[in-house]
Image (cartoon, rainbow, N blue to C red; front, side):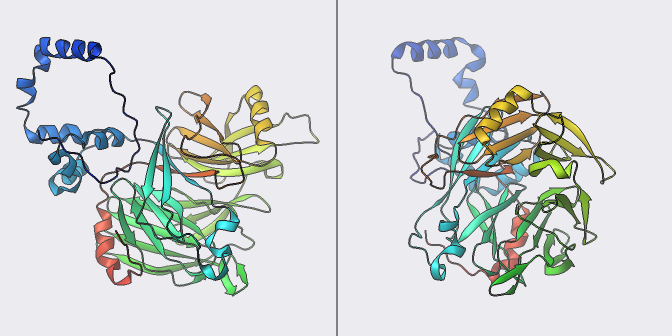
Length: 436
């Protein structure tokens, strides 16, 4: 095959190791040539369709490494036949995580005078974490315009929301292939709403809730509005509206999607807000031990809604701890599933030092991030294993910069066919230009 060295940057960052002496390489070559099953005269005649099928099963880092082999392999990502094959195959689910640097208030778009940035050339970066190998990869988002922040993830797509106050613009991007699709702007003006996202191969549902601007200087959590499109031809451009429950607060800005419902933490006092997307209905669920919770977070793990929080009962003889509850099938009561070992919690509390923590879950994994420390804990629900996550090598911690990470559950996908419908629907609403 003709060797090919593309000039385009790959979405993954790699470190390749090469042999420094001829000994190991020569030994490996002799082993391969002596093995009749590895005879290159056989493998060089492998049918292309079968070879493409093998490549389609590669995990994303290995796939992008393989693209360096030749021109044909490099172009597979842009070949309809290969993408159709990829969609038809049943892939092993990869419960990965995608993290971004948390913007400090002084660098947020809404805090800059007149909404003008002195530095608009910075390319946004994300950091993909593989919990199986405890490995980090760096992704770049060169096409995402300035003034947008990541807000949700589902089905291999990342949702970006405009930071400027007013009707919100949302962008869906696939970081693996670099695609970018804009949704039509919301109908109501909002400041920093919560975003709920659900993407399947045949549908997209987006819900924007709270932070309604009742004046240029005041916001209130009053309504939510939803966007829907599916392969059956039905779509709704923010035409589904609903009133929020009284005295609700979306301070976390996070929504968790599970079985057609969206869940978000409600503060002061602690409870859980639930929204049935199909029925267009909101309600509250009482949180467990709500008077003694610290920094509660909602996560989805293996098809269950979990609540992760620290517990402090200062007047009772109960040790401080970090606990995980699961919502029962009735949808109203919780049961305690796990509790962090006390010795580990003492170490965790010393690092956290009352500054708080936030969580993200995916599959059998839960990651607990400690802001300002660069430390994170990974809990494997299946193996009941707690372990510290190696720090991200691409982030500078400390010094008062934007080093703290916030993350989303992310499953890498080379193709998201439903975005084709979205492109056809939203072309008239494109409001930004991309300069290559």
